[in-house]
Length: 314
Image (cartoon, rainbow, N blue to C red):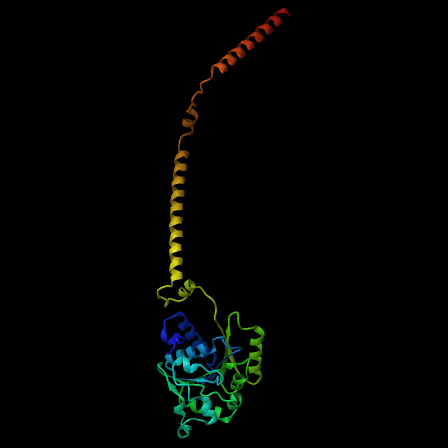
């Protein structure tokens, strides 16, 4: 079983909690009508359709539901690889009736695989047939779902990308509800609208759209949920060290500013009278400056004497 099954490998992780939230939302959406069959599709490959359907099946199984996950992507199915089970016989073999052991062809239990997750069983895609779409519109497919409903609480079907082939659109007519997986910076709005329109045109029911592959930093990711108590990555440790250095620098700066403010406060408390009484030291004059000052005073004296004589004559 691969690490892709994070809901099983790490049930306390934030991602596992998101799948439990998705499980709850699906249950509330179908509260008026009991949900028995759920189809998972996407627009193009690589948007996380099989990953979401696998972990969602685990989330329902963890809630005590008896779940069967069917890999209906008979062109490029990979559910068997995610759960580590035998790929054949599978869905294509059951619908076509072509198996290695013809005596066990009618026994449904031979097409199901028990997984490490309690209450969860998998039906792989089986051999790649030449006509997958034609097999899905046969009465055998409807009969298969009806028979499996008697054996479990919920059937989750991992379909094909709906923009490339019509397999998932065909299945949407015979299931209770359908969810569409999209990916950040990968799914085009026009393609998503066309897939939703095609499903509704054939009478399918859309439960909602899952937005996958949203970029988020490791630090913010670990802070999104209180279960996340694992050791941080090397990048987050480096960020923590940088934050500690910045905090120490802020503390030193604040301490220096406090000291400076205290010094300014002490200077402001000095009485102004004391500052006015302070006498600046007298600067000693050079001989040339002293001689020039004496001559200036003597000239002023002569001017005053001359003015007084002129005033007496008058």
